[in-house]
Image (tube, rainbow, N blue to C red; front, side):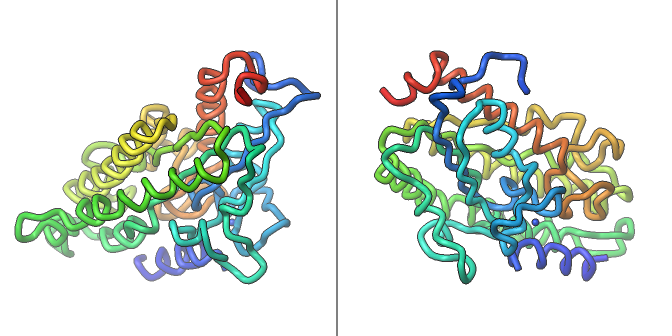
Length: 293
């Protein structure tokens, strides 16, 4: 099981996949929206695939696309599976420009989800897999917290200054843009659902706790830099990987619908996209004109 999941995630992470409210911009004066980020944004393996940059495994149904359509915005989506902070300033793949290059002084709205790869959360998800019940395996929670330090959370805290630098650089390149930081979602409910998803109770709580900690760091840093944080945990309650297949926003270790393992499916991307669009409308209730003041 771990080998199968590792291969699937390696493929994804190497990059080697109308709201009822009034829109925030008119058809003749659309918001100029740039989407940055990793595979949580790009929704790898969700159909249809974006042919513009196959190495990024980006979907034409990812949350930036959903938000742009709801806002009637002009979208430049450079989110890319496997992206870390370093790929914002350097090319992730041959022929793929650094993500920052999409930003200009005319950009009105920027969204970003980043940090899962920098903090090795996806590797942690692999390390936590246990198909058999206790005690036939090793608890990743016990291993990660041995000695009294939660090493996964410590990595996230050590990375936080890098994200502050990201928001500073976005502000420098797109000084008039509203910046929206989209958090990571609700992957596993409290105590998990072993064996449906192969995480022991303590390990499911450890893994989701680390995801929540990363989102908390994103939220705190966003507020410190005048950006808007978009919570995706709350909207995912009841839609985690333990939910019935038809209700999931996040797919499990073995996806039931087209999506990468432990990534948003099409329904999840729609939910996040509409939440982001609502956040943009709340920030700019008078539309594009206000965004450019």
